[in-house]
Length: 133
Image 1 (cartoon, rainbow, N blue to C red):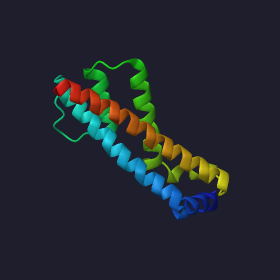
Image 2: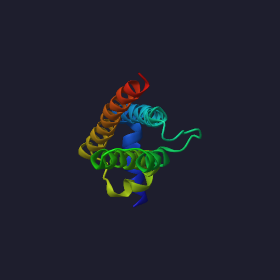
Image 3: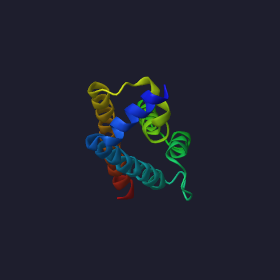
Image 4: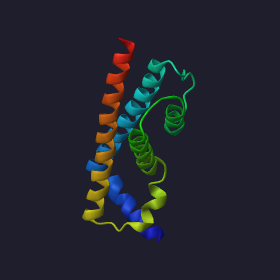
């Protein structure tokens, strides 16, 4: 099992396309986190003075702000997907053989998470601007 983990890990590590996509996802995640914090501050219901992790920020948002169930579910899904790539990727590699199909699947998923975070960040930024106008 360890050989498959290392084999797929090496395939991801050596893939310029995957590492570029992962870097974009990290940047998008930082933007999403910042956008959540700025949105929460603009609503005036809670001040986020500490630097809570993304999951804790989302818990505060759900607890203290009015967002619909669909948005809450989408945000939690994104946080879960992001956490899988940032915190759990290496440990989950045993299930994946090193092949082009699986590698492309990981690249597509990372790109999708980035795109969704960019989309929701734009919405949060727009709502923050409206609240501050």
